[in-house]
Image 1: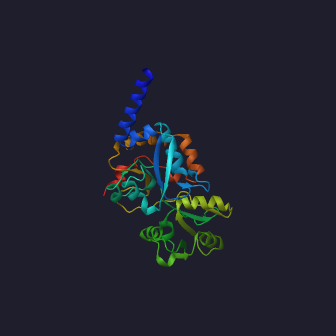
Image 2: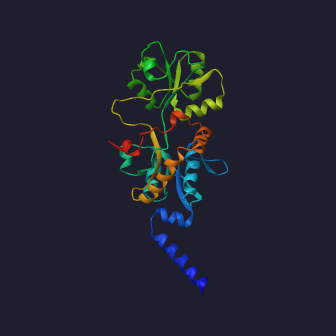
Image 3: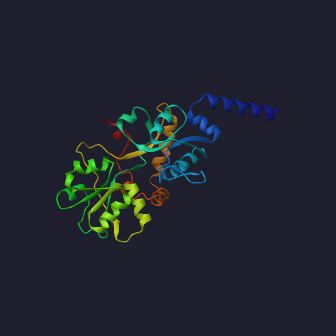
Length: 281
């Protein structure tokens, strides 16, 4: 009789979870569905199908503290992440830029990291380049940038770098080659990508410029903040992840994961950087 009663209670709990919100269902099943766009080193699948990356390892840690041990990956392109979340094909998506227009569509977790700009320079940074302003003040300096992408170039130009100072190159490899050959004084890329590439190159003649000031547009808004997103109505899930993520960000284990995936102190969330501020119009 006791066994039957226990079974009945378990069945009732399963029914309640099925009828409940995403958090309740995830805790009942031990699984959360993650949409991802195969972006190394942040969220991607290995050749044997294992879901990994910085975003994924952090999420596994946070969810394990909530009793959720399994991540079920759903591959899509980048443009399909938010629509897939809204359509309930996924329960959460890895870190994307926190922007005011997106904050109306999804609920962002507190910032995971800062996605900024970075430059590769000759070893020792002989021209002492630590900002776009440093490049802009000397018209003879050249900044290499790949063809096609406009965001980094727009940031440089907004900070005073002139069109004639920008050397357009076809790909990342050409950017580093231009700096080594003296055709450019620096090569600019997204910080996480540049750090990863420099580690793989292992070329003693190049280094990343530290520090490198991010563009300041004078409005006081934090830019480049990225984090996970859930559906707007999944506030319980959001609150639990927030509580654990904010605590985890201050641990040596989190710092070790950052280093493992080529995120440096420049990508760390600073005091006062919040989702609320990033969502403000």
